[in-house]
Image (cartoon, rainbow, N blue to C red; front, side):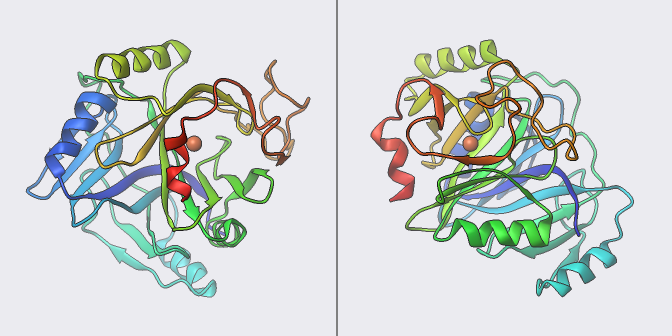
Length: 297
Ligand SMILES: [Fe+2]
């Protein structure tokens, strides 16, 4: 069984590379770590790679990378993937600061890159904009969330943290409540990508920045039920939905099987479960603007 340790970075294709670099450096608050003619690499202020941008014909999330243990044997991992019917390729041409990566495609065609060596792309760099702590999770619209959850559980070792009814599943690969989500919708594509902020004050600062720049907040601040994260959502210039969140649930001990105790949990203890739509799946906050739901159309 492959054991992922954390999500590394997301690779996006974009028709307007400079416009997205401007967004990620001036609004998101990442740092431009390296720039090539048709590629850019953006890191958090502490120097962790979070986003790769490649010039392309249309916007899309093309690849997600995940870190595996430093003593992982890529040959053994490739054989495990092969047993699950997944063909992989070891590549050495990945990204700055990253060693070789074992690459393959998930069941919906998204590239996956497993890496075990990496280095910081700078240290405590000055940044503009919001300045998130890290890339947190990526949510996808798929026609069959159960099928996607089965693939991510069987092939990549993810565990189910929560469902909302039978249309939205949250999955974890480490202590964080979710690193990938799958929601049922008409067209398979990324639903949103989420970056973690330090706390609610950091989120307030993000809201101030959106106000100054006339960037609509599509939803939030809202306190979600599953994961108990406080979240705000907006769209970037490629019309992709971006979430900022803080205070996400963490399961520190898998054998205990409950999320780290917090006074505001709905259940005591809070264990993985199926939430019902509508009533308890959000604790407080306004409903989303209608535009939020466009991604499911
Ligand atoms: Fe999210």
